[in-house]
Amino acid sequence: METRTPSPLRRAVTEALAVVFPVCCAGCDLPDLDLCDPCSAALRPEPRSRRLEGGLDVRSALVFDGVPARVIRAFKEDGRTSLAAQLGGALRGAWPPGTEAVPVPVPTTRSSMRRRGYSPVALACRRAGWHPCGLLRVTRSTADQRALGRDERAANLAGVMTVDRRAAARLAGRSVVLVDDVVTTGATLSEAARALFEAGVHVAGAVTIASTPRRSASRG
Ligand SMILES: [Zn+2]
Image (tube, rainbow, N blue to C red; front, side, top):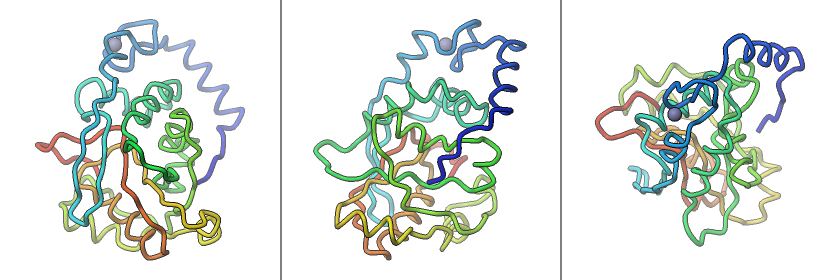
């Protein structure tokens, strides 16, 4: 996992913008605060599980809808890294009880890393109090998953991730739990699990901050 921090210039620009555009609640736009109490309460984890077609168990802290969806988008797309503490707290609540394993974030593409200056998933892991292990790398860019159906998503992602063999060797046989921000069809998590399985790494499950409600499928 790349851990590049934002450049001083980028940070200065972000801080200057915060003065020009006063902050408002990421969940409901209430002015002058980052997150109001009711929206904060809407981020309390209520973990739910589902099993993907390939057999991977995924536990998600929140439903990707309403306030949680708005806050996650602000965290990922608007650079509001201050929300990582709340979302990391939710993520921590999704960890499968009693599971001894190493958290492995689903990797960020180089272009999104450049665009954002941080990896939302790795940052949320750290705010959850975990030490994420950057075992996976994205090896090529993919088409935007949002326009694709279930089978097309799987084909689009096939072979897109590789395992850092040296990091895998340091695991010394310990299991891992995959971590992502939002699960929709599960194609991304399944592909990550497949890459790890092929590298001989045991995947005990996956956790995400949120899962999309079944009626919509707008993410990978
Ligand atoms: Zn609010």
